Figure 1 (cartoon, helix red, strand yellow):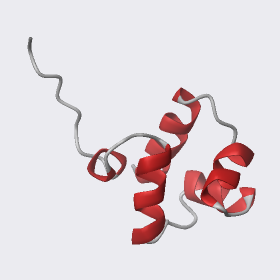
Figure 2: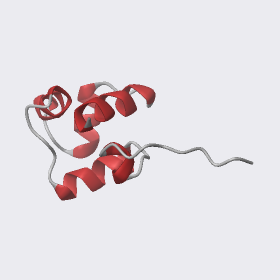
Figure 3: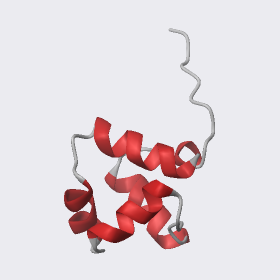
Length: 70
């Protein structure tokens, strides 16, 4: 779930793995491993990811997004 969400939100922002890696100060292979589910970001990196992707940590972790009615 987390791996799919990282990939989906990264693509929605129009970022490549390399661009996201640069923003987070990690190597591209780290982003690749997250997206493949071969590793997971630690708590601090999860917060940095949520800020960079402008998405709450809870949503990255799989909480359903409920649209509020107007």
